[in-house]
Length: 149
Length: 278
Image 1 (cartoon, rainbow over the protein chains, first blue to last red):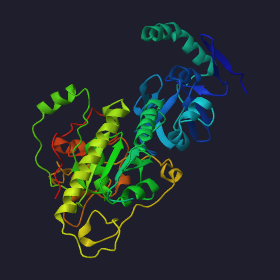
Image 2 (image 1 turned 90 degrees about the vertical axis):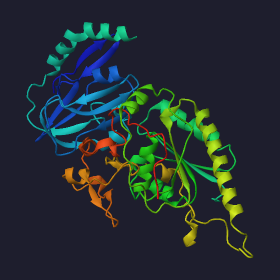
Image 3 (image 1 turned 180 degrees about the vertical axis):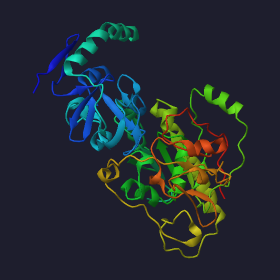
């Protein structure tokens, strides 16, 4: 298994497991058999902080396009829309996080997974590529965060 | 529960927002100190299916009721009506603080046509309060006190109008529809049963105060959500056939005569007058 990388968000260490693929909307992707499982990266969870509510506006069996809006999330920071990381068909949602979304904060790479899709994992990033992607945008993200403070 | 006591049911927010939960807890804590109220808490109203104990409890409440929920009052009222928890519209004096956008929208919207109203409405009132209308628990407590006094005045007037019987060995646990003489008492559930987290649901709610039975929604829906009742009226027959995030049925008919109560679309216009019932 490839080693995990760490992306430093100030003093916070965002762990990027080496065996996962990553998407530019800050979701991780774990290919397994015919399906891809998705969840939020540690980077996303750190920015969102406590998750209060999660809701989907698509159904199991729906085909979604990349970047199509599929739901929204309410956190201690904001209410944000959620978008499909890839094109494909929705296989299932994690019912446990719908009932108690705090699992996203507790174990975002494990029991806090979000949904599964079928479809090719095209254009996903390795941990190193995602790390570089975060690094390239970090200055801008910091300016935006400070502007909101 | 005696008919002289007012049932107050608080339907919790979906999710774990601590600010919402704190408001709910403050309201409940204040209300349980009030005399003459029976206070209960259930999960989010929209998610309660027919098997949920919270729904069964709501169905068993015989008399006047105050429902506090995170839904627009009209949506909550007609949601209950669809679930056969019927009553006359109780007018609340608690209104949103900042209503400017709504006023603009309503001013631009012509008065909707009069709807076909509800059927078989029992002799009781249901007051629906929107928990988004104030951040201050005191505003809700004060309004519920006012409602309790209003209900008592109405009950007293009704009692005074009925000639006393020579002999009445019954209790005062009569159903809201006293004409058929049914005796109905609220079912007892422990708080854990009432608060079991239900699965999420998604379905439309028809506002019969605006619905003119045009059947556009029946024509539009591909999934058999809508049907006709025994009185040739449109109804939401198969709620759970509805597809999440699909609002076209509401858009297919004018004046928003049906709605999706938890949609994140802009705020639905609230009517100023009472929904019609017959």
